[in-house]
Image (cartoon, rainbow, N blue to C red; front, side, top):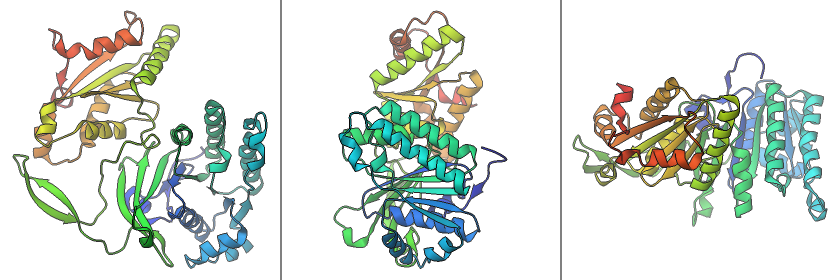
Amino acid sequence: MVGSVKKVLSGFAFIDKNWGGVYRGGSYLLIGPRKSGRTLIGLQFALESARTGETCVYFTIMRPKDLMIQAASLNFDIQYYMNQNLIIVVRVAPPNEIYDMYNPDDYLVEYFNDILTVINQYHPTRIIFDEITPFVGFRNLDYLRNTFLHTIEAIEERDITSLFIISEPATQKAYSIVEGISQFVTGIIHLKKETGKERLQGGIVTITPNVGHTEGEFSSEYRIVPNKGVTTEFIKEPLPTEEYDNSFTKTKTRNFTTPTRVEMPSEPYAFSNVYNYQDFLLILNNQIALYKSTGQSFNLVAFRLDPVAQVRGLLTINQLQNAIRLSTSKRDKICVIENKVLVLLVKGSLKGVVDLITNVQNNLPSKDPAYLNAVIDYISIFNLTVDESIENAESMMEFVLSAETSSTKAYQPLNKFIG
């Protein structure tokens, strides 16, 4: 990526309002089911680029006429910008015929190489790939991840902002595919349609950062509105939520209509650095082996939540996990075990641990001082730095998980670290 990193408007007001736009040279993944508004957001993204006089390449599997009709629903004359070479529409035929071949993966790689070929021809500032689903059906998921990573790194090095659109995964393999590529993008946009309300043409949109966008994750109701496209700016029905008084007992219900950070269901592609216990052990063993061969240190930090916090309605383990996820980079790894959230800080240091703890506090459900003073009493921390005495992941995990019952009381209150 060249030059200083700055933000540019995305064309989707919800992102522009809450994140201040998208990063120039950043990569974004848009996930959603059919007829959820995915293509409209892609066109809004393209239109914003064209309006500023920048070139956008739009890869599509749609017929050109259908794409023009979709654009017209936004009051967007895409042909006008095509005539000025500000929007380059590249139709890509789905590779349906190759899946019966012995090894289709090698052929699918060529589609990703073609993206770079087109980019080198037109030198755009943005690209949209609508949609990439037919081109990611690799048999070898590691091969897919490496191919996708190579592609977006090559795009980012040219300071091009990219948006890849993919279908909502419906099978376990599809989940694995989406999870595999989502870990490499700057941010994720997720559209979920409201069940039983098809006529309303809308649902819930969630934007989740992987890198940067320290404003955090946001979620809101959205609608598809004629001449506007996908928008969160419409008259909404009030949504109930609960307030707490200073004793943190439920007191009353109020209404709100503005977007807010919310705790979303655990979905593989939304929590791309959260792993199950067995996968976490494997990663930890690899990190120990790297330490023994290169000396690269790392930290294993455990956050323990007192169950009383959930009983009192202050904080759940899922809320703590979400705060920790928002406070880590995608290279760090997370695992939840009962009432503990473990974080593998790949580039370990005491400063990194303190920064993590401070960021977790900032990402808790509320920043109200009375709430924070109450909740931090129920969170304790144990930090373990790798050394030569560590033999393997199992012994390291056993040491961390048994620390709370040791006579040394290794778990320390959160406020000891944050002052």
